[in-house]
Image 1 (cartoon, protein in one colour):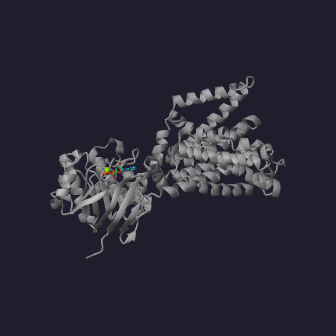
Image 2 (cartoon, rainbow over the protein chains, first blue to last red):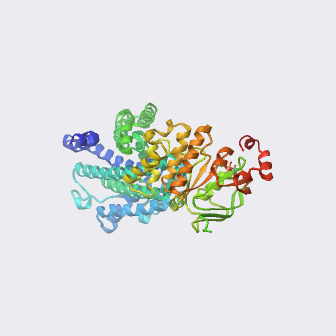
Image 3 (cartoon, rainbow over the protein chains, first blue to last red):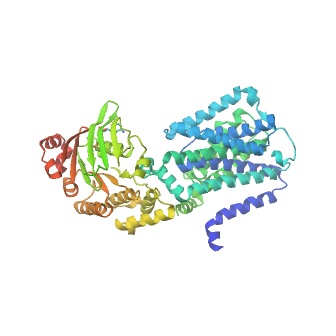
Length: 325
Length: 245
Ligand SMILES: Nc1ncnc2c1ncn2[C@@H]1O[C@H](COP(=O)(O)OP(=O)(O)O)[C@@H](O)[C@H]1O
Ligand SMILES: [Mg+2]
């Protein structure tokens, strides 16, 4: 029990906090909505962290998978009345296929070339979703038919329902991250990050390992997209495939929180989502001021602690050590 | 006479208009130590890269254990039993000595067994005491031996060493030479060794290959090859080689 506490103390604390939060905030729909949004973005950023943090594949196109998930489940529901729960799985599978193809095509690209290619992929999907109106609804976007309290249709009357599902999603993404970041695959991934050619020559199948990460990352990201769509009821191509609203944001959360660490995306999301919300509500009178304040705080955070929020708490080292053993 | 473990025929590697290797061919038996010398830019490192799959040959064939391996990926060739060390240390910089070796040992083992194997190799190479050290803190000879240890962890039948002794003093060099000999005696591993120091080449190698401008200009007994007129000419034309070789 003592070692359990020492080794997983922080994780247990977070879990306890996450479970107590809804009890304290039950009266405040607003706070619950922000907390849920932070959880969804933490999960999405954890997906990004899988390929970006563990394999150094800095993607600027993760909105592509997010949108694939949202569109797949929503279109299946609207046109065929397939439960979004099944749509979640279907979107994940479709995104897995897309991620696999993209991974193969981009396997030789590195650094900013990789980032630009993934960005282009998401942009292509955005353009397609905008122009293929007969299927996607085009620029008008999609609205999920309101059913009230219908758990089987992935709809809940209280924000708590979405909160718990988002928490479960974050737990799933973090578990997958943990499995890959530790043990034998953790060694191999660190080797790839530190010297890819030496890793290959030492017998590591770098292509297959990256493929596996990208497929998992894409599939889970699509599931985040479905949960997000169910949570906000409405989305359009420009918001769901958004570069600044999704792709850059999930990357930024991981980087600000602590790239390649498990708590990184969670810290990043719980820093950025409320920050954005606060600056929007405080400075709502002057157009653009909220974004400026948000941007300034962001830059300050990066300047003060370039290695991420994890380092502020002095936890990064401990977690890296943990990943080593 | 047994079939050679490695045989290379008419190997060409071109970088655009530059022929880094042209028509290179040689054979190697199991457990042999083959030396490669040649002026800077002769194509020695390129030859290693082609052998282990880092560089795709433009033409020619590479047979390893009778099987064509040209065009295979490095991790496949490592699994078959051939790997190399890097001319400029390419250890995983943020890992400890043990972790570097353990990572390579994962090729044939699960994590627990890989760790055990890595410790065993470190013990044999007298690196056990620095197992936990970050590789950034190592001395040159320790780095060289760690590179060697990491390559050993993949269970090679042939190990290619690209100037592992470059920055070493004479005593340190003798230490590494003794280690290589021991690995050959105990495990039957064959080595191809690129080295500028004639001292190391002459005391270590069974056979010597001289590369110049991407071509093999001499091959045979090390003592005889270094006195070959073509070899002397190739080296006199190159100031870098004159001091060492
Ligand atoms: N990746 C590469 N791209 C272009 N030219 C290269 C590359 N690698 C090596 N070369 C060139 O090939 C020739 C042989 O280089 P190398 O094999 O490194 O020589 P050595 O190891 O004998 O000093 C040199 O002229 C070098 O500039
Ligand atoms: Mg070289």
